[in-house]
Length: 85
Length: 547
Image 1 (cartoon, each protein chain N blue to C red):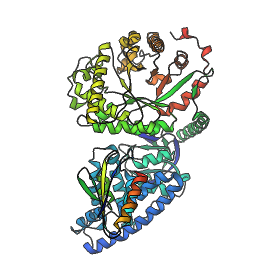
Image 2: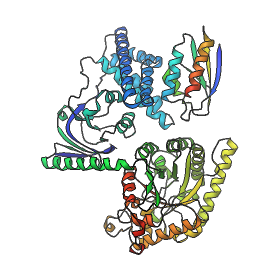
Image 3: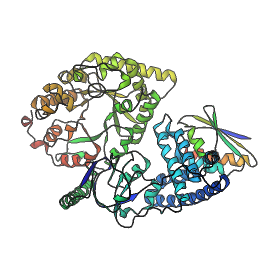
Image 4: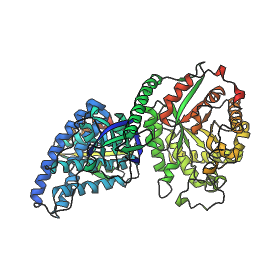
């Protein structure tokens, strides 16, 4: 399993548009991807669940990527976070 | 001829025939069995995803990447596995796919609707819209919505994807009979500058309206059905004049507000909710002169939390940045009553327990609000304004509470700006008469002309029998305004006016002459006011005519 932590910089938090971008990236990967915030975990491939976490600006999330090719997938997902959130 | 009152979404006029859009109604009926209905769902979902790709491409072209991206998100919602699970759970009951999709949509929408965050609350509509779109593909027998000639679209509500499908030149106007002013589709309607209305009581949208002649007056907020010929002619002229005037005003967009002889004023906006900042910007407002925070209290069923208030303030402050946003603290009591405040009945409410007087008696409410304001200050250019001031000891109280708010935030490790400007509303004769003393203690003044007139003339502003005598141009009022402006300038602090008197035809030259720094009005009047100020030469204005 590969994991990374990221503090949300976007002033609106994980709102609809960037949520769509990270979910789209996560869906490219065959294994499992989860996101954790404030003790709650959601499947990063499920947009409604990700938005329902209601992650605000300045909060930290932990993303866990598990499966074949997790290294590259985690790097790609982390890049989407950095570029958009 | 019938006419209806409505709320305005975007200003303007439209004259033409109605085109009816009606959402598909879904009844709870027995389906073809779980597997077959699931298959129908999957098929309709595929078509929806395909259609959303088209909407995305259309929005990208018409509105740009940022607005278009929402359709990508809609696509992910359609394909979402939680959504699919919810549909499956519904199908267990043997219902049709249409019904299952709609209830699944409602369940997930409810999650967003219950959130403590204004932005997320609005997302409930996104989920509903996606569900409706899938339903429309399931209902093959129902023909899609088509507009063939330029029309006024009338609907209960319209999915934004439907709006994007219609060619702009075919839309004369839109009436959202059940819609709100801040839905996604209303925001898009404003961006596309379509004259539009929403929220009409007592009008049923059905086939009988199709092709009916109508006049939409989104300046006043009227919808007239089957207008008489004279009314149509009258509105056609109004529309023409309005369009011409609008064209002329465009020349003032993006320009500073200067009188003929080069005296600078700023035109700010009065707004009552965080969603109106967009409106202020579109009208080229130079800041927010009055953000009425009481709406947060009026809309709630209990005291709004610091977090909730913070979200709203932050939204406006960020959207307006670097422009200034002056937020007025709690102003309730008198004609604005709220149940959970549990205020006693009063003999004389205008002179009663209101605004700062409530804050002093219940300091925790004020402290919560100030903490929310300081937190929001971090995200832009925020200033705090306190209403109904009469004594200097009230200013001491404000400063002490503000210091405590800062200390609390510091202890919690939350960022804020130390030097947030704190000003007062001058709306009592007492504050005006003592304005020299107040000027030494606060960072700015804002004159509230309605209350200042009411208290100076001892005339109840809401009493219909006194309407004739209620004269804000009374010399006792204008003399006080001049006194306040002079004292502000002597102390080197700015002074604004935030009542609608700020755009008074007759007093405008007076305001510019005495150097009012900022006039705050409804956003729609911004350019008009800027144009009128450009025609004033203050060297020709004779002060004695006004005071």
